[in-house]
Length: 540
Image (tube, rainbow, N blue to C red; front, side, top):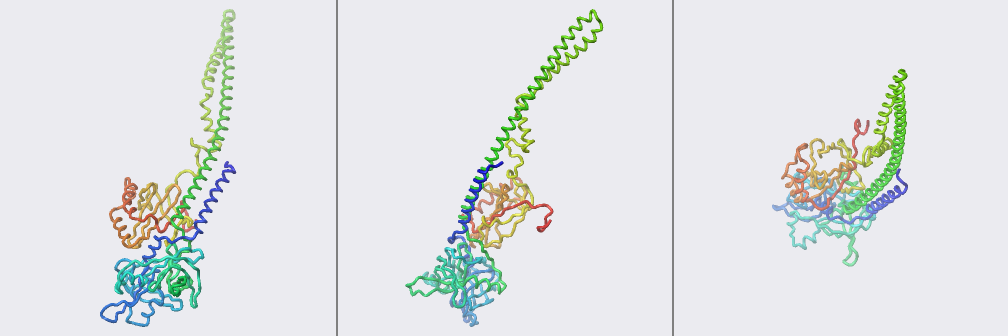
């Protein structure tokens, strides 16, 4: 049995781990540059273009961001002139590449300064941004992304240069709260914006949209600078009214560093709990072995004493019978009737002597004590191993089979990925679903997935001993994504069942791993369990 002190220690470790985890989740997150860069991929320059003459001439510009691969949000005032002048067209210039295109307005709401545009050319598809679930007072650092005109002028760019893809400008500040204006709800913040930033996103530390930057307060150069963004209370209903269902993530924004710290604390607490359990188990086994050894010693000594006593009795019988046989042989000279009696006595003496030898030889030896100890432990505790592990369910590896894996939110960092349950068939040789081989990288079953359409690389790992499935997602720029795809084209993964397939794939994937950033943008951690036979759709 485990002692009360054991459980007290375990509870103390688990309480410390829980406290640290809650503190990490509750702490305001600073903006992660990797997440801001990933969000910037879906930010565009919205340009009003005069097409009345022979040349295409840009008139003015603002910013916007993708909420689907072809739908863009901006401010209504950015495209206001194009709505009343049919010589003006709306151009979309992405942050990278050379696939500029045109868009048409789908819906415009001057009341809350929002507009929804749709790309008309199917050649350009943008990575959509994720919408935050809401605004909290402890959001901490925020970032504004867009194309301020004063930066273009400071760089000496001409108006025609806005047709070239350029990375948007990122500025940082802090959330100052939500504040309704006369017409709509706004978010007050200190991340600097200027003319041209209008329509660009205001992001939290995980790169999720908190609002649409719209205007700034007039400070006359002497007062503190504050800026306003259209809040989610305006943006989300506007999108849904236009049948656009954006990706929304209301989970706390936790950094990868925070997750790693929490994982280390969880591992330390788990290791301490396991050590406490093993120590208690070992103490219990030592006590059980000591009791079993004492019992075995008593049983062996009793058996030896009984055998020796029996041997002595048989020896005395043998001696007595031998003496009687000798007397009868002497008397048979005078009395022939004693001949038969002498033979009987001699037979008894011989049998007694043989029995004495047999009992003496077969008496239990002291070497039987350990054998009896093992037999007692098996009988009383079900132990069948020398180390006492027996059938402890906490020890051993998970077997092959179909697994259902469920997301563990407190161990994950989710900025936009889907979090559905994952089901797959796992085999001991690293084969998934009888067709996808996983490779062995740094002692982990690993597979790298490089899609041809989505601008993200996923590194999936599975640990059979803990039945933990994990996916790290890297949201890459266009150039980095092309480099990853080129590295992936350099090898063909071995099929399941091929000799040394896991080692071969591990070596093949090493070059691709080297191209990825040090930290992923997202981490999805799943806890898996073996699917029960006969369960379909959650019903037996």
